[in-house]
Image (tube, rainbow, N blue to C red; front, side):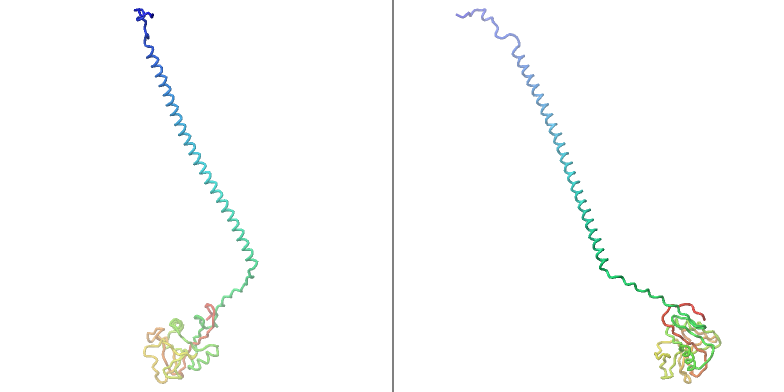
Amino acid sequence: MWDTGPQARLTPRLSGPGPYRLATVCLATLCAILLVSIIAVAAHYKSTRQGGGEVASETQKQTQDANVSALTATISALQQENKQLQRERDELRAKLSATKAPEVIRPTAAAPAPIVCPMDWHLFNSSCYLISRLSRDWPESQSYCQSKGAHLAIIHTAEEQTFLWDLLPRGHWNSYWFGITDSDTEDQWKWVDGTPLVGGFWEVGEPNNHINEDCGYMIKTTVLSRVAIRSWYDAPCTMALPYICEKEMGGGANAAAPH
């Protein structure tokens, strides 16, 4: 039989706080393991992030390097193309020079010689004018001018009229024949070259054909107030008056001429 006495009942099942101490140790161990795990995970996550940044940076650098290489290749290709175009240009120039006709050198046109009027003649535009000191009738005056290779003056512009009028000496009644007449047909005034008069520089009331006045003259007088463009009169062609000859010199540059 088993002893079931009081001594047996006095035997302890467990003595002291042993089971709680073991549980505490186990719990502390688990906490330590968990803390290490957390630290390890955090470290791994940080390492992973840093590694990703480095990968992204490396990828960006590789992309930039690729772009630079592409640009360098493009520049090199353009330089080669430019050299090729220059070679083609030079070849075309050489071919053009070989086939170009020799340049014809034309002599430069000489400048027109200046017009020099004879002694006592006056230059205006391309004509020389003589203010005579002798008196003749109108037909004789025209004959004298023709003997000098000239004719009685033909006046077309106010500038020419003023130029000649300014050459005349002012006197009591200084009158000079010029190259106009209506001796062929009354009131149809013509120049000595046969062309009809257009306009003119007549004095008011002139020409009046008083006593067969068929030839024209101009005056420069101190008796009456006269101006160049109102200085033409008509008179009988038989009157003896000084005259104005005109010698047309043709093309040439105007120049001061001996008078």
